[in-house]
Length: 305
Image 1: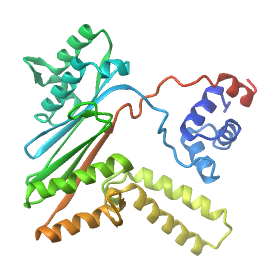
Image 2: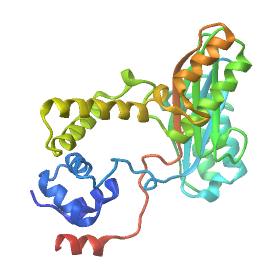
Image 3: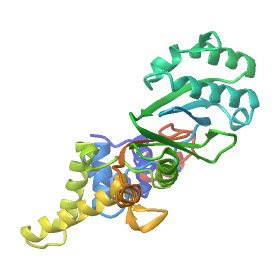
Image 4: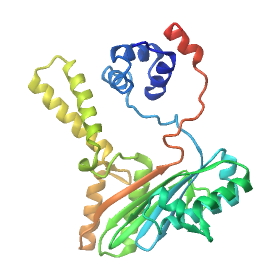
């Protein structure tokens, strides 16, 4: 198929690779964007198919706790100026509080009551008052039968409001204050490392197969025998799991132990079972494209258009 300038630009933004490398990758993959990203990674020209630093939206992330559950929500605005508005901050805090009484879905939250009207209507009223578009984009809820759901906000602008919101659930009959001490540390860890899943069982099988395919292709290029290639792939997968699953990551508070080992150590100290059952991390603007610098001339030069 014909490789367009727009396709090259999109791949460049996805991978961070050079224009000509992106054009070659698209040609090699028949225009398949994901396959082109994998081709670049195989050649060592792109480290990951992430868009960190290339996504943005303004607004705030808010967290709120209620008993043995907690919620995190993202309310977007058009400008950072609005995010500093006290009225907007109050709205985000109220919406986060309401979210603790829902099932965690955006739909349920939008329909939930806030000061006598649906949250969706309260946001519409704020749009009219503040004069800027707003979007209730994401919401999540974690709860435990016994234990705590710890929270952490990074880039805090007010209590419970900031740029990144994290929830961490610890199931246990142990003292809540001691559980929350570790839970908050793990939440800070999650904010810093952004794990893909709690453990290997919860990783998206599509992601695992994709990584395995890339590792296999990289190993084959070494020219080693199949049995050695298999061991190389297994080793790289183990390393991948250690990097992206929360329980296997080196704990940022104490890198000599994993997060899993930190939980086990607390359980031993408290003399009772402690189980890390889940986490949620919402970063403001994650996955939303913004206008970037215009690469049209550079793309046109690379593609001959």
